[in-house]
Amino acid sequence: MSAKPPDGLTVPDDGFWPAPRIPQPNIYPMQWRVETAKLAAIYEKSKRTVWNPAELPWDDLRADDFTARQRLGIMYWFAVLANFDASGPAVFARATIQAFEQHEEDPVRKCFFSITRDEMNHEECCQRAIARMWPGGPLDWTPRTDLERAAHNNIGWLYYNGGRYWQGYNGAVRKYPLAVLFTSFMMGEMAASTLFRGMSSGTRHPVFREMFHRIGRDESRHLQICMTILEKEWPGLSEDVKGQITRQLRAGFVFLSMILWEPPEGFWDLPPYFLANHRVLMDHARDAGLGILSHEEQAENWRLAMARVRAIVERWGIEFPAIPELDIDGIDVDVIDPEDIIPVF
Ligand SMILES: [Fe+2]
Ligand SMILES: [Fe+2]
Image 1 (tube, helix red, strand yellow):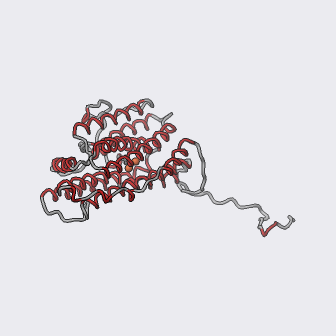
Image 2: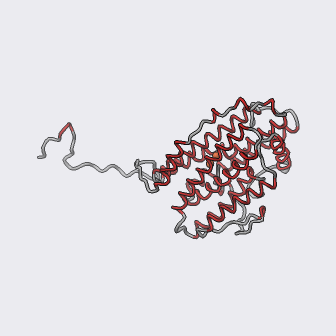
């Protein structure tokens, strides 16, 4: 007979019963494993550099300072940006849940969360800029002119495609290993940091300059997070995974070109007039001083970003896809399906 347990404890005679196994994938059991100190440091930095989009001097962004066409153009550009930046919170929230379920080390989960947090700020910038320029935008307004009807219709098509991406992503996020997911994210962040760097120096409006500068800084940090995770994931990849990454890089180009440049063939399901109207609307946004680069400058910028991605992945023996649209040679990748597309901003 054992002695009486202290403090009201119950100690079973036949020993403690082991808790049942937790079915996986599952966010339990909780643990805080740290393998990559650098990621933990980036997370700390992200907390210190948080900013509040509500505190940008929005009153200085006056609708009266623009013509109706310029306002429509600016709204249209932010509606296009929102296809990427406003999906960010949901995309990374899901990736955060996935990281918990896969029991990734704690700094990975926390960095995903910080990207989710930042993307919500970028999403808020889209929301606020659109509200200042075009109340009811992007879609909850009634167009009255042909230009307005074209804008409204294009945005509808854009979000239809965004919806296809979201459905694909939901399937993809569980399907792909971290190395594949993160190479795609890395490409998105490379695209985003390139875009906002170009626009913050190109815009003529101080509110946009401040906004693009801050968003660009966040995107550079996201890129750093992706690179740090990938440096861990890339060594020892199988040929099969490398092939998936090559395919993902092409998917990333096709998807991101909508905001970086112009939508290529291969994923976007758009009516035949979309591109012509897109160009007209982008020109009005350009004319408003938003900071959109010229078509040629955009192509050059995009080419440069792709060259950076290429240099990074080739170090790890991952082949780069052919991008004939930008005269980049490489491996031919056939049709891109919505499930292939992962990149976000
Ligand atoms: Fe980002
Ligand atoms: Fe973003």
